[in-house]
Image (cartoon, rainbow, N blue to C red; front, side, top):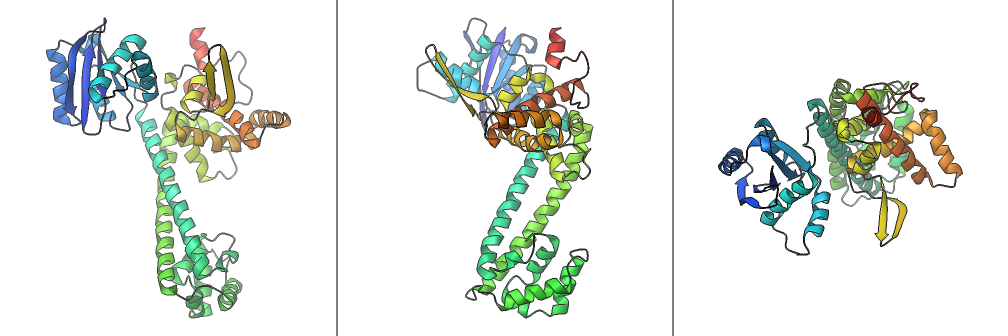
Length: 416
């Protein structure tokens, strides 16, 4: 058996190989992260008589730079293992006391890790699931941008028109945004005819706001203590911020439609049957689809997690431990060494399912009754939810508060 270690980088990968006895049979060499670089890797492996059916290739999951090379090697018949950098870091500490870390040394170290651990080859998830994960992460990025734009707009608005925040229940509702795009300062409000203000509010609120609201805005503008110095610059800034916010919100809506379609084509559609984050709610919030998409996308292929505990550890929701000699202590805090996206989505979803489903609600209440803090109890619910999600995706079945008679989770079914 041959073991090929690849140290992944943005521009150039470093490759080395060892045999079953740990002898270096292919000295470390560099290959570009491009078509000619991939061809060079294949040529070097062939020259070293390393056949695809008698070798195992390992690479660290470094950003997204490994994906193209993985696809190339997989298409050429190589078994490829994608390794968590945490695993190779731990192996490095065991393997040597040297402080030296170079790409050439790391490529051999990865090959050595494969020789000792002999892990199973990695599989890419269903294409729909992969796309789901990508879009769910992009949505998180856009939501964060929208939040930043809102915070910035509020800071500027507090200078220009501090009384404005009390005029609308939602400063960034459609009616309020339409008004801010036209006249965000007291001076501009006072310079605008009451009939124009009424029309803007009425057209963008579905008729819920009208003359009375326009007069309230006028009254607030008359008694405003907003800064007049630099008012023109403040007005210009608010208008641009609100326009950009509106554009970002439209993009988020388009993303959510695409996410919803992908979700129902993937194994993640089984998660829609869980009360609280499913379509069964009378009026599901769009955020629900995003939570399910994040969970399904981050889990990917459910068969790569043998037990729910491994999924929980992958999400960084396992308890951190400290061990010295014979003493071992668990402080109860999350290790947070894993997918932050999956951890965030599970925690958000847990706060919904505890309300809508008795199975999760009773568990949450029992932890609260034992004096646990809300966040600790919610973490417990999120761990249970992770196991349920894994079971639904693996077993291809809808959620039931009480599992079917003679039910065994997927990993126990295989053992039986």
